[in-house]
Amino acid sequence: MGSDYLLASKDVVWINDDVAMLGLVPGMGGAIVAYRWPNGDEVIDWMRPAGPLALENRDEGHLACFPLVPYSNRIRDGRFSFGGRDI
Image 1 (spheres, rainbow, N blue to C red):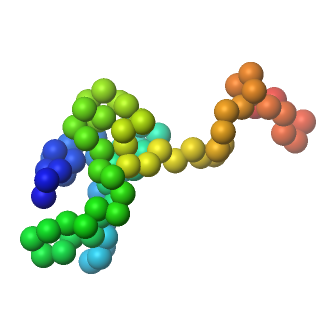
Image 2 (cartoon, rainbow, N blue to C red):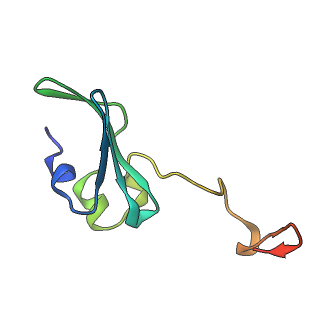
């Protein structure tokens, strides 16, 4: 695999079954570093795998995907009200 550094990284948690592998970094908000299908001696990357510097520098912009959960956009002033509570 051309991205063995992802497999060797202690920061990446891999979830896999017989078809696909999903690499997550819990320390970066559950960011996805790779989604791939092993196929014999090759790997089909369905998302751009994160480069080694993305992990080293904690650069979310160069990961495969950075989930924006539970909020999908910027929240004005970093707070909002819901159910009578300020969050």
